[in-house]
Image 1 (tube, one colour):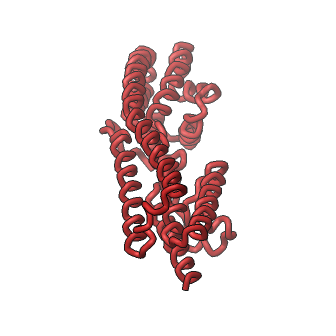
Image 2 (cartoon, helix red, strand yellow):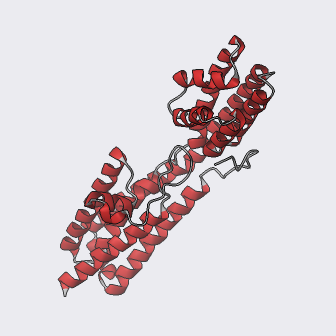
Image 3 (cartoon, rainbow, N blue to C red):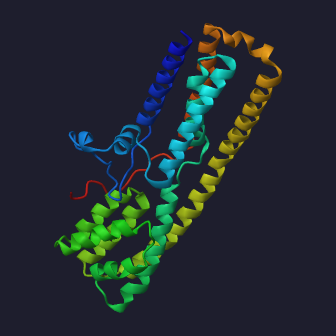
Length: 299
């Protein structure tokens, strides 16, 4: 009976993990569109590939770290179950080990990163355009010194230009991929300047560069303010976990009610409520999508 309960707990933990993995957005390539997989492709994949596809495993080192945390959580749950006989540890420990690093980490500041790269790219264009090059040629020249985060987008623009796309259409597709309002302004100005033969492009880009730097300074200040509650929550969580660990070792009688079936269900509910509050906090501290001025570029 005990072995059956342990198996049920492990299956429940796996089910909860798959639910969490399904709620986390998948990888987004340089085009800004989600990766799609063919329906019949899974059967031809190896076991590691099927595992990566099923659990949305991040590529490279991040995926290995996540799998290591999952393995540590499962082993920790088994150890806790063996020491206490509480089946609920088979669910709580793996779920906590996987969820806490994600919920307590700072969300990626993609907008700030892209705006910083865009500002450096605009500076290189401002230095290139006065030499008499066209907008298309200046974009090709700027690719050699472009920031790494912009390189895939510029490569796609250059391929589109080689395929006889107009500069305006190629830049509009880049704007859709970046999905940043400030990038819309820069790329729309470049597209308009290309349509007019390059007239006024340098002055416009210099003005936009100043606006970009002001926006970057404001966004960095906002991000610093958003980071403060996350720091406090990390400290509170660490203190809480430490106190609970000490209490489990030296004050087992305090947790005696949780040894019953109803108590374990209640404990699981309390842990789920805390993780849910962390998820809500993370969502509240994420920047909201802003209105763009360009949308629906050619596909």
